[in-house]
Length: 182
Image 1 (cartoon, one colour):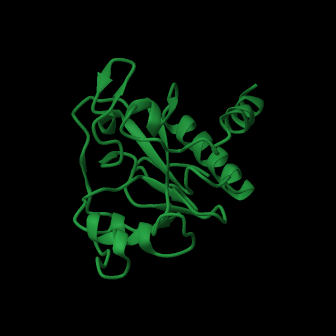
Image 2 (spheres, rainbow, N blue to C red):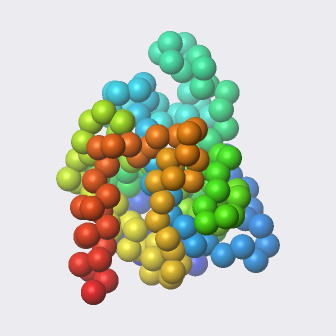
Image 3 (cartoon, rainbow, N blue to C red):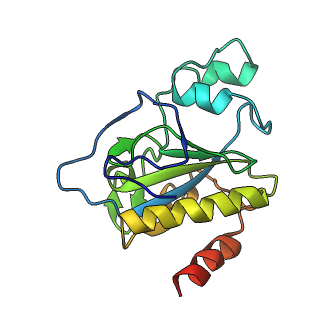
């Protein structure tokens, strides 16, 4: 995997989201934020996440959707349970994934981060294919934007967010990255 100068990942399925804008002038990308999402909650394989990120979610399709159908959110990337990578926003643009957030004393993490959503919940382990895709995707981000840190959504928005949740294996993820970088 490789990210080009326009912020596009080769091999990803690109589905453009309108929920993005320009990054602040001169703001370097130096953070990767790991999230998890499933729509409807706890269900995998549907189109709910894609529809949410593209503002096409049908509020009548599931009772949960009534409370989120008007949200304007996105992420740069989404990795489904099979390890397929979707891209919604070029990395050179600001995706709307972090919300009110702080990392190392800096607010507005959307300004300087790349957001990756994993299809999952706080209650179910993630799939091996997701870890493999996440590792390759993270390495592509690191190659394009050296010096990036990594944080979970729960770390940058404590008390407000819990994802990627207790079933995300940070040791497995960071260990795989360390093995490749040494």
